[in-house]
Picture 1 (cartoon, protein in one colour):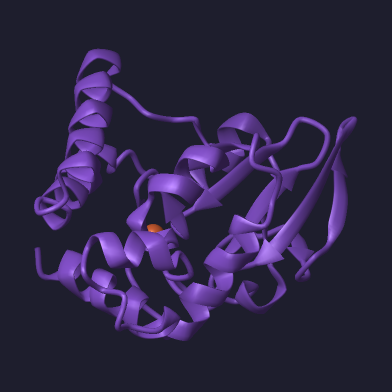
Picture 2 (cartoon, rainbow, N blue to C red):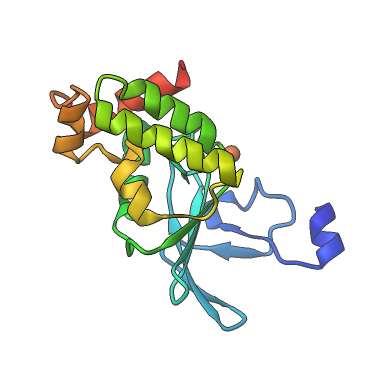
Length: 190
Ligand SMILES: [Fe+2]
């Protein structure tokens, strides 16, 4: 509310969150197109972290604001949604253009990379890869924006439908949902 006052901005949110977001001005639906000045944006409902979570995709610029649904090499915790909700929400993100630049709600990347490195420690190629990302991050200090190409390939929370990757970390006996559940649970207890 203080920011709203100071910057005279409008607060946008998902329609069903209208009673829980103080000062909300514009109520958005799932898959709603709207314009911010000359920029065309589409919003998508991505429940999982919260029940009314939405993401914003800037169509022409290919910028995606994922809030707390997707992080670089991670994803949001499940506070209000089910594992299935989150998998379905992540699938919506996965199918966007691969050169989409992703802006996250939190810079948890280094933590996520350490988790990824530990999880893949028995696969030398994968582990080395995460070590390299970690080294680059330590130099740069921040990871935002990432690209969907990198996340689709290396974010472990997005590998639920990648049989090759699952096999590489000996989790190919798990179906999509069970794989995601396993990874999410491991991270929650890490
Ligand atoms: Fe959050």
